[in-house]
Length: 558
Ligand code: SIN
Image (tube, rainbow, N blue to C red; front, side):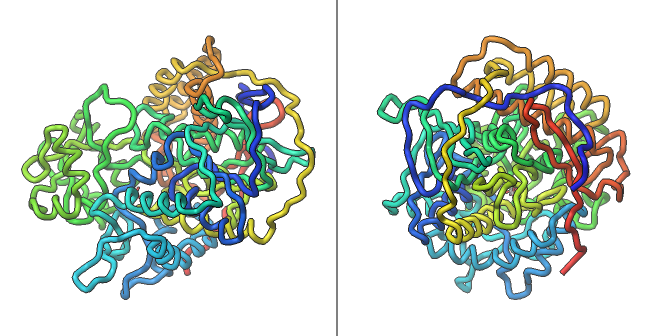
């Protein structure tokens, strides 16, 4: 581990709410989040008989998982192998993947998918009755399993939610925002504080206590004004972990999906995705003059890794002075659109675009956070008893750029591992809780959110430079003085988003190179050996962000 490399000048909050919790609930393990990672962890924990509390911010099926269109990647085809999946993942990650984490992902992936099918998920099949596989950017084989054509996440969510509902050992608490981690005198996790939007006995702020706390809260797309993430993606898990003193890593690697439907310059919030699988089936990009441009950029053309396509689109938009490019899928024909992409077809038609006869306007928008709470290969964070899984985590699987459809797989594989490791160590000693020695301060009002998002879109988006990132940092600093906050969900979420934005911009400023999804305009051609390291941050007792570099356990191939 290297020494502190940079210190951020302005503190962020160490606590969201200091008041004594009004109620308490106990379990053997608490899982926070109800996407593929949270649901799979909860179900896995039941194998060892644990009493599980599953906490979710909205309704149980409202996370990012149900929006996933393309699918879930795994070496399931006869002409494919985990070694080839590993190789494609390492190439996309541009030297920053943790090779052992990727090896775990690709070798345990096929079995994890079979486990999902055993839990009731139905994948699309081919004429021979086998799982139908397609291709997405950066994959050299057909290895993307899908369901309902382009409704893979919705089907996985349906099956797992049903399995959880059928298990009396899992108590689900909905409409509950997680606030802070509770620890004992030795710094081990002992539970969380929650705010439940309910007028019943368990309404308001309470404490959920358990020696194992699993964060599965998803991403932080709402840091940006335009994202494919749902409104619940406000980085609550990463911000909680930071406040508790845990390590976070790779925050500068934010993936922008190349083909998000362009709804005009004023569009805000969650934007409609047009899956990469549409290009996998043969659609291609055109500029405003009707010319294909990806064929000159990369041997895989429109199916190049996602960062390559997003950058090429941005460059073309600049060259032609247009706000978007076009996706041409007209030649796929009505049957393919109806069978393979019913969700996207409906989403386009509801906006007056018929992809069977029309071009679709598309532009890059925030899609996925490759970084998050730093974990080991068993999902353990740097705090004893605190685990992270899915988009909230940084297992090192994605490196500088996540390979398409590896995210559902990561949530699935590492959730199973977390359940396994907790089962081996079920009764961690529980010391009395430490009461916070600090007061809650620095809460930001909801109205600060838009200013922050505009700064992030403008200065820390697909394109970044030292100048733009310094502007973003200044804007975030002045936002941190916004007054009028109240202890309520919108203001807590805004505070979480701000904490994330501060850490992301600090990482992006420090990394003076272009690698994967981190594109520095002032270092456009540089992938620097010096930077083949991971940036890891944590907060000190005063709320200052300390960043250090760590070596990456990278090996080139199988
Ligand atoms: C897509 O369907 O293009 C998104 C898949 C992913 O993000 O992995």
